[in-house]
Length: 308
Image (cartoon, rainbow, N blue to C red; front, side):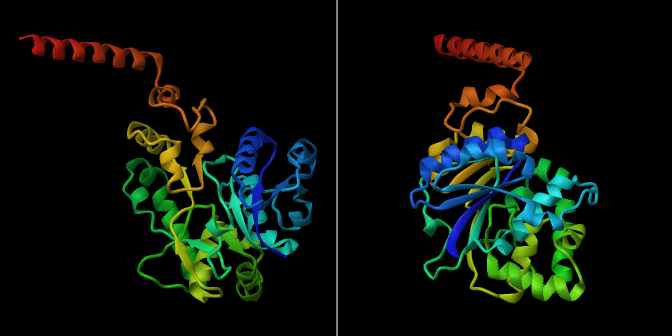
């Protein structure tokens, strides 16, 4: 097996996002790494246009026997099934490690295998407490409490105890042998499937991270997130107002995600856009008028004060 590939699980509804991702992948793939694009059988034809020497489009069919066609705790089947693909991809025997990337990601700088693998060949593991999100009022209100309970449930089932439970939201490098040990040593003794685990907690990356921290199946080379995710409109707006641009983000991250869960309905500006262009999708015409009026009044006051 090859040491490292990238995995993109997508479908026709995210085709435009995936096309942007693939374009940025080709622009920054300095090591000539391969990416596997896994899609429903019915979508293979439209995604085949992505196929190159480094892009391999394949049907999810070999893994569909693990799928569900019912909602799981209010979560639609498609979402659960893409989590299953990420957890089960190792079974196809294509790579020792695979970096899971989302359709709405965009690479912002050149990357090589060394961004994902430590010098000993084992993957970097993204492990954080997400204290910045815990202090974000909007994120805490909408997501934190339920997510914290779900992650605690994983730790309890795995038997992992730590004062600080660290995990990640996504964009993790999965090690195939760790996932194999999770299936053989955790799921099978309980007669669980991947789906049974996701019924307990629908956080595939936390199942991996907590199992790895419990078993130390491979060396843990801890890193902060490789991808900057703007989880909410509030977080993205804060970044815009602070003046962060694509070049700033590229100093710390290989890719950026403006979460499509909230951004899908608006025309989000390109990452290299200026502040005014980036703010425009979030501001109504009446709000722009108020900003303009306030700016004029403020300028007039300043001019009057200087003239005195």
